[in-house]
Length: 416
Ligand code: UTP
Image (tube, helix red, strand yellow):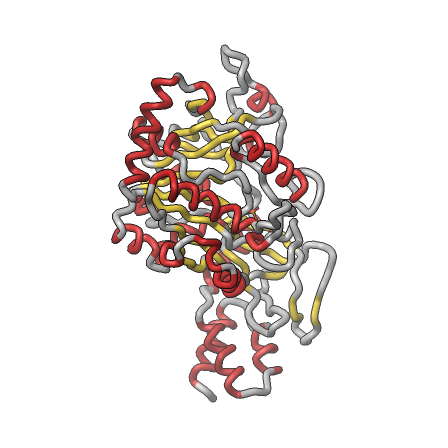
């Protein structure tokens, strides 16, 4: 028997994933058979099985010491303080010490747009796509600071080609091509509710992106950290693709981190109400952290400080700044994986395509904000919702193209 096949069989038997051989046996083309075997050899079965086993464990309610975290309100900075921070940040930007990373590897399932989320036409008169809107922020920085800011775009296996083609077709929206680098994020196999690795409709291992927390490992693996260091970058803004009011080049955020001698900084929005379903910045066992709304009690969510502000009222919006030192540190640790039950199309053991309307498979994802706990300090900058946050998440209703478009138009009308 073929040595490779024997090796694969042994592995699959050891980890209880023999069902994958059914697919192998159905393939008739010899080259495809070999490719499939090769792909089976790249899987870390031990990791996948462990992640699945974890999904069955009851979550351990750890006795963490949760405390509020200090924050600075951008809108309430005195003129002197604003100028001081602005000067510190502006210098770094002008010196070419800032890079921007856009995380565009997500699946955008809620929006339901066919194609990468960044290619979505927001419905403005100009018909700008989200990617073009993001490019505008860098072009503006270019003219304000006379510097070409390196822009790294994290894609995934599913959308990398289409994303790159979109930029090519649109001539990088007038931003220098040499300043834009694409890199792919990591992925992990998806498993059935019984923990069996699935086969996708293209008869390959069904894999999904490993979450935005995978960015640190991917930046290392793909040579991005090396490239940033070679360019002398000191600060990296990392944000999602889907906030059309994102301000990735913000001297105040950089200035604040420098002033507070912090290795990272995050922007926050004040929670709309005590029970808004968002994660909030806090200190967990003394370390900066983001706590999910499910993790804090009602009393804690409602607690106010002496000024009447919510003690846990700074919501995390995936607009963060990291020093190279912080990135070096985070990429050495393994972030926890969270399990999510998703609807998945797959080929079952009998070769039948399964499509359902109910979640039928598990996906494993790391979250970027889980990295904060490995850092000693993090500055939090509260910003205004109407100035810096217009997410495109859902097809309709809250956080939809319609709400984001309105916010975008209003902001640009008042900031002409
Ligand atoms: P979301 O958590 O909103 O996920 O991602 P999503 O994939 O865009 O949308 P849904 O949940 O499927 O509807 C927040 C940001 O993180 C990026 C997304 O592209 C978005 O910018 N992201 C998310 C990644 O880059 N990789 C991932 O694996 C997950």
